Length: 280
Image 1 (cartoon, rainbow, N blue to C red):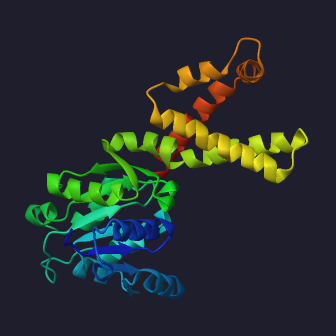
Image 2: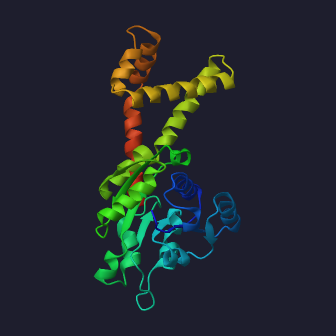
């Protein structure tokens, strides 16, 4: 890629993308820019990756071809105001806006950025909304993305290349991003929660904390490997471990008797409903 990439916001997810695109050699450090209100954070990124940093959000729009909005939802209004184009002053070349601000719908971004633009100018400012997750920090991320009507196939492919450098990416209609948020955006926390409980159970059964942690994490890693390296479904793999009348069967029967399966499904549905509420 020859484009210059800018990041408005320099938090953990922005750093994950910066590190991933540099490692994948998609973009060189001199073509990566970041702005933030935290001088110390910018200094750290500049020292670590050799990128250019600024305290001025608007410089990202004026100097870059692809701009990531990598800020918290409560900061998005100020950021959109900062980078909105004034048609009487600005005649920018085509730029791609990629928002990873959780819960912020395309319509909100379009309202702020397109308000004073002609149809032609709007078509030159495509927007893609993305829901990444934290395993992107270790290049095992899962991102769902949804482009707006101004996006071309090239815009979508550019976004896909960047996101794929830190994991997998799937394109969705925007209406499905609340489900994506509930399943993969929040999903790592569900896995961490299960790990917490498994470790606690091991300790309750008399194991040391370190042994319980090692058993839990290695077991999880192995189970994921079985899921990803073979063609068997989760149900099939579970059945292979669950011998009739055995220890696993005792655990699964206890979970089913206490409604664990329905509680987990309902919890993820609740997360999706909360995502819809937050984006209104």
